[in-house]
Image (cartoon, rainbow, N blue to C red):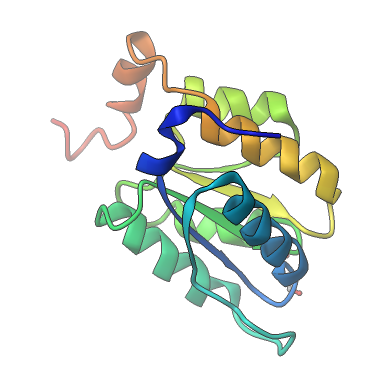
Length: 155
Ligand code: RB5
């Protein structure tokens, strides 16, 4: 499975807790094969860690523009998505299929993909990641809707 020509312009960060490390490591290897510039932000061993620490670190780096997109993996993907979405400027999507990944990019301009290692098989996760990376945001009415995410700040 390959990617389009824009891959070299996409900088990615990937992180996981102990519940997501196996899938995270698998995806980091895959991203390397696909030619992406990918930063592995840990965790790096099976020791139990707290997913909010990893989700916040990656989400803040994406929000700061250090990376264009991020991938977070925990056991279910739920905790990672909850924490990442508390960081302003981050739109994290917990995806369980290529369809939801495509819509997360096309309609929601998601900039962080969340996956559940204990929920989604590795083959499915590969398809989800590939779709997420290659689908562009459609803009238009979807941009208007995203502009309503933070109504107080946007007046
Ligand atoms: C860790 O056991 C587990 O709670 C975590 O990986 C994640 O699933 C939380 O949402």
